[in-house]
Image (cartoon, rainbow, N blue to C red; front, side, top):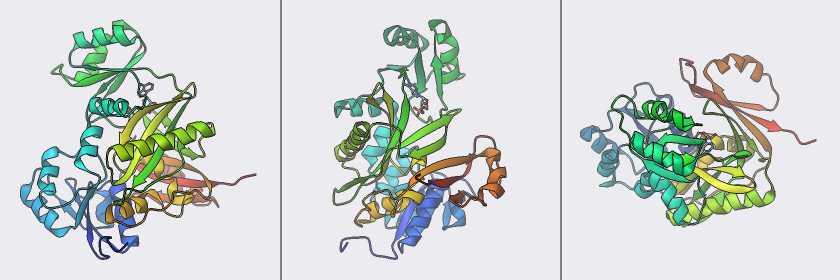
Length: 360
Ligand code: AMP
């Protein structure tokens, strides 16, 4: 604690979406200030913390931001490398550039996971329609074609069930100029999707929250439920795998690790070097939630232990789900969290609700 960033210091947060907003609120709770950087005017975090509205390549704005903050963190992984290079000249970036680099690109991410002994879907890099046809004949159908970079919420990916679909699949992912760095993944016939939110502090200590079971619809997370409906051995293995990733990356901060559970085996789908939607349940289930845990990690506080004091189901409120707010507001065990977004577009995450599940 004596080495922790002094109270009243300023945490710089790259990205002002709902995750940045929740990080800023957690920072304030621990006696820190936050400053947010986001190119979009009126981002959700701007309602709770001062926000710099400037482009990712605005050198002057980046220098001023770096000068105004004591440590830099981020709420999403697709921040341009040049932005980070500039900030890293004068400020610590936590989690590190290496963690970000690996998770920005599905190919080095999978290679890293395999290197440290964790199973992933079978995969092959593809950069042309011809590559794709070849990879599909090697990996077999069904398979999933994904862009290596910039995919999220199921975007930039297409499932292929028959070799005849190769041209349309390639056109869908590669776009008009017909070229993109992509990856073909063998289909994992999973029974469950789970995720572990883990954290590693500046002192190298690790704490993980219990795995949550995740249900997606149209590629977007709908619910996360704890405890997950998987055997205790799978739960333990998922936590151990997360700890292995954190150590291997010499990581500082909160990480989200998504797994498939297939025939009792754990297959890592992807890692997110940040707080994660599937960890929102910790707000209602743990003394120290994932947002505070992240702020603790990057400022040198001791970590919360991750223990869970309730069974929780988190439901995302997407698009016009917000019409249910009056009903949810009357539920006794529901904790509502809205992101302050004015317009409820289809597929847009507007908020979430954590429901405490009473046992028996
Ligand atoms: P991703 O963007 O990689 O998280 O993928 C979005 C969703 O697509 C996952 O949550 C899964 O439901 C599904 N998915 C992705 N990759 C695979 C795979 N290799 N096998 C089976 N399902 C997958």
